[in-house]
Each structure stands twice: as C-alpha cells, then as structure tokens.
Length: 251
Ligand SMILES: Nc1ncnc2c1ncn2[C@@H]1O[C@H](COP(=O)(O)OP(=O)(O)OP(=O)(O)O)[C@@H](O)[C@H]1O
Image 1 (cartoon, rainbow, N blue to C red):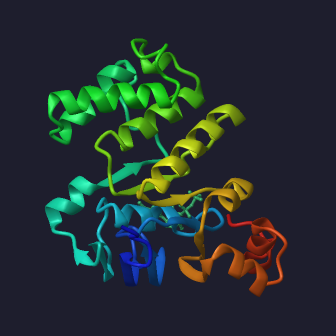
Image 2 (cartoon, rainbow, N blue to C red):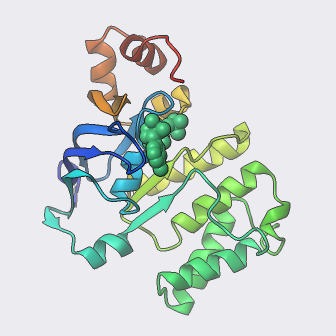
C-alpha cells in the first residue's frame, strides 16, 4: 500500500518560549510532514531546530499551538505515539560503561520488546551498522563514528514508524556517515518517516525529499527541495540556505 501523500505530523501555530527566556525560540511554526517522507529541519545555529524536534518527540511542551500525529490518516493515541516514535538525540544517549549488546538489551526492554524479538533486532542492528566485532566492548572505548552508530541503533531498536534524528552524523568520518545515511535510506524505503536536522548541506541535499528552513524561530521556506531550489534560483541547498538566511553570524 502506498502510504505517501498522507499527513503524518501536522504542526499548527507552534510557539515556544523557555521559562528562563524573554524571547520566543519558535514563533507560529506550521508544517505538514508527510508519511514516508525524509524531512529536513535546517537552519543556522540557534534557529530552533532542536527545540522543534524536542516538542515533536514530546520531550518539552509547546507554549501554544498544537502537534498531531496520524497513521494512515487516523490520529495516533498517546500510547501509540510513545511506542511508535524513535528519537536519536544530538547527545549520546547510552551507557558508556555498557557494551552495545547490553545497551540495546536495556533500551529494548524499556519498550517492552519480547525477548526473542529484542534479540533479533539487536543482532540485526549490530550487523547492519557494522558493530558486530565490538558488540561486547564497553561503548566508552569507541570512536566517535561507532558511538554515533550505537546512538542510532538504540533510537530504532523498537522499529519506530516515525524517526527523529538531531544531527545524527555530527563529528563522524565519511565511512560512518555513509553507513548511517545508507541505513536510514533503507528504512525510509521500507516506510519509516524520517525527520532530521543537520548542518551538513551536501548530506541533507542527498538525503531529504522535503525541507523546512528555520531562522530565528520562524519557518522562512518549506517544501520540496528541488522546487525550492528552482524557485529561489539556487544551484545547491547550500546556496539556497545562504540566499535565504544571509551571511551574518548567529551569536
Ligand atoms: N533550555 C533552554 N532555555 C532557554 N533558551 C533555550 C533553551 N534551549 C534552547 N534555547 C534557546 O532557543 C533558541 C533555539 O535553540 P535550539 O537549540 O532549538 O536551536 P538549534 O537550531 O537546534 O541550534 P544548533 O544548530 O546550534 O543546535 C536559541 O536562542 C537557544 O539559545
């Protein structure tokens, strides 16, 4: 069944002001993210990308506005929303003192995965993400690229329908970056909706179908990547980004 063309996440008039802040970190953000999309949330430092992803994952509340999730047109229940979403944060979200196998067992158990299913998922992810040989070594001893792959494996241990990734390839070498993006492309082709942030414009250009460019907490452009490039006469995503967000630093 072709599940594309259905809205998966409807974001409506979302504003966010942190308690300690005098300014909105997000202002009137409205976006539709379609089922089975690879959707890039892009923007300069401090634009509001992590804030928006944290809201979508249910980690922080909106100040106003709302977010609704749909599965084949039907709204998700709260329980479904929790169990069908995966999140790969910017920070490492694993225990450094444990091995990848132990980490995956721990986080898989948190999703109440049956033992057999958990073992199958664990071994599958260790293999496809090239972690088999190091599966029983403490993660704290790993290289940056290996740690990023462990972070990804944990975020998808429960086979989520919707996967949020906050800079999943930051600080990794070309080999690990390719392995991560290749695997994400595979699960997207199998139907997983992916929402991701990155500062790596050529990676995002290769990976995303649709994007939203965010600056100073506002959506300044959203839509199909090719369409936006044509509309703004940009030869690449990087040119589009600079054309729309300007050259000045965001301090
Ligand atoms: N916990 C917080 N309390 C107060 N302000 C915050 C908090 N977290 C983020 N902000 C502010 O909200 C704005 C958006 O931050 P956010 O981290 O969402 O941006 P970002 O686009 O993810 O940036 P980067 O690309 O640097 O990761 C910034 O001005 C930031 O200083």
